[in-house]
Length: 333
Image (cartoon, rainbow, N blue to C red; front, side, top):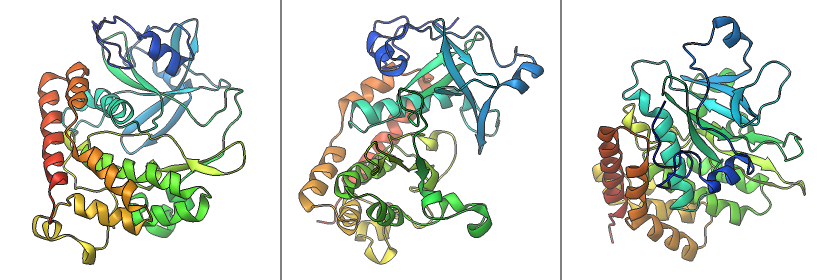
């Protein structure tokens, strides 16, 4: 059994299980164990075949889950899960793949706790063999179990593999998403600020998989549309070699690059300021947001230390943050 000395949800120290805050946010106040009674390897093929698998996107397998008698269990046909479990991917060429669940959990906690970005509620859980898995609470259902209408930006843009090729979710630019957000969201200035913060966060924490399907709109009770909580946030540079941005069109047109961006091939805060103005943010909000992210945050290091990453990967995560932060802080002015 995995030894725990921090909450596997909030990463607060001094807990052997989920903290009261985590239980309230992730499990609606129910007392739940972070330990599963089985491992995927021990589960028979027949049982696994009957498990309601959500999808396999890229290399990540996902399973639907629910809570029964204080235990997290996989759903079976006919059951509707309110949670998604993402185990360690089987794709063996990924570097440090055993750390992928802890990486996603840490990155989501940093987004939420340090930068106050609304995120899907999440935690880690542990199979009987000690392997970690990432658990996220679904936000596309009401408390009464009614499915909430939701669309990702690949669907909103009308991009599919058939009309845009197999890399369709990586096509376009972050400005394209902003234009669609303006078109479909009546209160777009508020949502655009959230979107801007998320784009900067993805850069600062090396999320090279922030593609069209990882941004979504959700219908409110009033019939309006807002951004969903952030999801699938991870420092992908630890596991693969990727670029600064997931979308092929990048942040801003090349003609608008700062001198630093042109010379180094990496953006600085001037480029994000240009992006902010181009997508319609008021200059005051744009500058305040940039300065927040340009300031080194000690809480980031605290959460990294408390995380379930291996010690070597913790050092890599810190180094990645420091490198991106240094690039971001630069300015032509």
